[in-house]
Image 1 (spheres, rainbow, N blue to C red):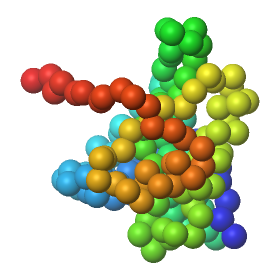
Image 2: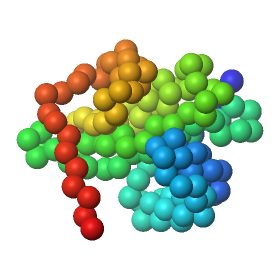
Image 3: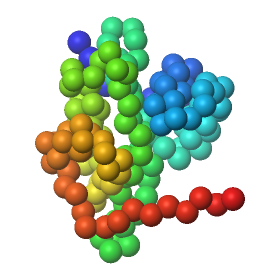
Length: 147
């Protein structure tokens, strides 16, 4: 059985390992210590909300939300910034359970929308998001790396 829980500061050690795996998936160098410090700071400053999936005593996935706003919609929103499931647990419904928890939490916190982005070639994730009810918008995403 898979359970979904909201992360506490006491969960940071285990979550840091998952965040490190997630970052490596995106071709970043492994650094569990930095991942731990990053998550601890986010949780201590209440700058993000994390949910994790656990099967028995093992964390198998997580999602991280950042609070943001919509000026047009005059309300608060969540940015679903991270979603990761360990490869051995993919296609078992873990990601769906995590996203359903995010939707439930968004309703409970009176958010107008949940925003997310994914790579243009991440067809598996796109299919999942659309199956759950997310719709693709007409906006282009841009980024600027400050150096």
